[in-house]
Image (tube, rainbow, N blue to C red):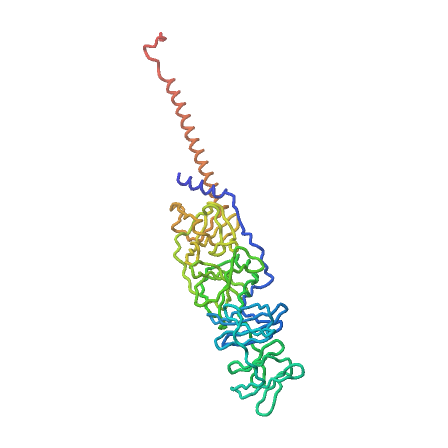
Length: 457
């Protein structure tokens, strides 16, 4: 009876229709490779640079526009990254200058005075001093002359008695800040060193550079084969640059990744690398609240870490309901590869359980309608295989595939043998019964009638 139940169950599984599901990921643009920014710097561009001033590491630039002026202030944040602040002014600006207390003073073209702090712009209480025409660099001994040349101003450098022309014209805002002499020329600021002019960098951190990163071949890579890869993400890349990580949503993959914000990494973070695309790696790491999310970062900041899988607690399992199979132990549309029907017998080769994962996963494999399927299933979608020792579960290698065709042939052969045995038993029973009936009738004819038979003469 036990064999008959097992055979019937196997027959039902064999005859069940196989339903295969492939995740309908949004089409990704694989024509452009994934290129994660190696630096998050943008350069200020001016429409009509009117003046500049510096206060330590803080830079200020006044740019006149058709609508008034824009005040740009570049200052380091708590990480040392330069951040940009833009302040729109309804008036045009002729001069700006930092006071001793760090307040920035603005002079409008109509000679009105304003002051600027982080609180905003207000009326000022300070008047600028007159600007000198000669300045000396005390470090090099060079003296610089700022003089009118035709309708504009020029700058010359003196070392002893020999002058050198640095700029012939179009100079303005000639000033000395700390020990360095600066001048504005053709809409750019220059520092003067000996008889040369060096452009002043006015770059700042621009995290929006990671808002539109091409997905490249990410859709294809995320559907491919995968073995769990633990990594450490360092706060600096191999080139010594700071590491930035961009949170992404893998619900759908279009031409660009769906970015949800970029931040600078300040310490080592343990993660699970899901895929390498272009110069970047998709890494599963936890945020400050302990919630796991996918991040994109430069591969040059990622280093492989050791990984020991947890002890596997089952070698075979049944699918509970329609069980989804993922290419990686991370459930999302981009990693969904198949779905197997209820009752499908799966071979379990590995268990995946980590604080990085949202659930316990198992690496499984099976064959459905001649198609080999391998991937990761959520533990809640599986039931442990509990058939008796007749099925040799204890000695299973954990690598067998449940083949519908071969098992169905076995069941049919068993049914045919059982049917033949039943027919044989029925035939023997029928023959034995018939023989007994004939013998009984024969015995009745050979018995003489009794003496008291009324018909005896």
